[in-house]
Length: 283
Image: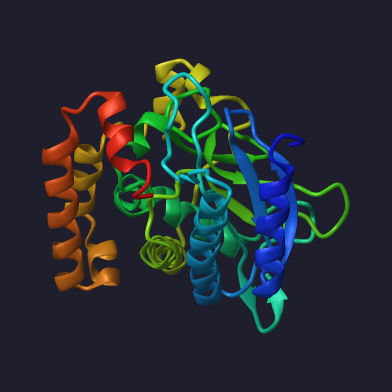
């Protein structure tokens, strides 16, 4: 924090000049890793803000002779960088996420169930790089298992609780990173959640332990499984997901698949260092 104060202050000033409110800042656990959280807003405005955020950080860093990279995994043996998606559900000006008793409402539960139901396919949009899957590892707070839970940092969907009412007020999807197109990722997550609401799906019981430490039989009984471990597997899942393909539209979906397939074929055999050198300033 002290070492990088000048560049962080300059980034904060640039955000302030663009009317992008900062909610909190702290240095994360990886080398040179910083986290700046900005205030929430409506969905499209959030995606717009994410683009402005990334370009601003890159530009200010370059003014300080630094490279700002949002590559999910820059250092093989250090913490990766996610771009976790926090969202809440509103109806007629009211946050309908809480049920008034410290838990999720029925609508919110169905929304979570929709995300989990489509998550293996969703990851092609939320974790779209070969490098993304180097970050998504068990016991790394990255959400490597298809599960949800209150305050569970190892579940793909975490529901943070508050010490006072109202609680909870938002969801967190952890399987998202800076390689994602925020418009496609956010739109697809909303489509998946709404599909759960339409079908009145249930996410099952919340998980309060690290899913990766559960015996396989217990995972199977509770419907918990390992999420795709490569871009190739995410592509295969997406090809079979009619809801997400319909949400994107057939033409965009097929173009998107073709681009990611080409990236997989070009990059899956690269070493870690080769991959990072190629992607460092692209994301």
